[in-house]
Image 1 (cartoon, rainbow, N blue to C red):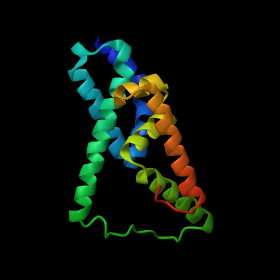
Image 2 (tube, rainbow, N blue to C red):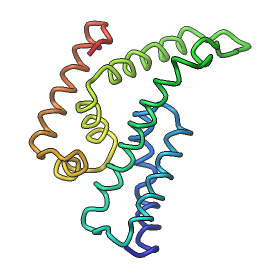
Image 3 (cartoon, one colour):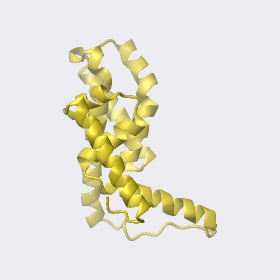
Length: 168
C-alpha cells in the first residue's frame, strides 16, 4: 500500500468509520482518537496490506480498539469520581429536549445491552457502507451469520424499545 492510497482511504472512510466507532463509545473525541489510531496501525502494516481487503481490515482494527477502550472505561468507572459528578447547567432543559434525551438514552441503553457479537454486526450494518461479505471479514464469520445476527439484533432492539424495557 502506498502513502497516497492510504491518504485516499482515510479521506473516504474517516467519517463513516468515526460514525460507527462513535456509536460504540458514545464520545466523539474518543471515536476520533480510535479512528486516528486505527489508521496509524494500518500505516505501520501498510507493506503487508492487500488493497482488496483493506476496508474490512480498517473496520476490524477500529472496532477492536473501540471494544478495548470501552472495556477499559468500564474498569475506570468503578474507581473514578466521574460517575458521581453531575453536569452543571445554567438553564433547565425544556420538555421537548428532555423527551429527545430520554429517547436517545433508551435507544443507547438498548444497543449497549446487546451481546457484543450482535452489537458489532448492527453497528457495521447500520453505520458503515460495507456489505455483508465485507462485514463478515473483520468479524471472522460467514456472510449469512451477519444477516442472522443483524436480524436478531433488530428484533431485540424493537422488542426492548416497544415494551419500554431497555434490557435487550
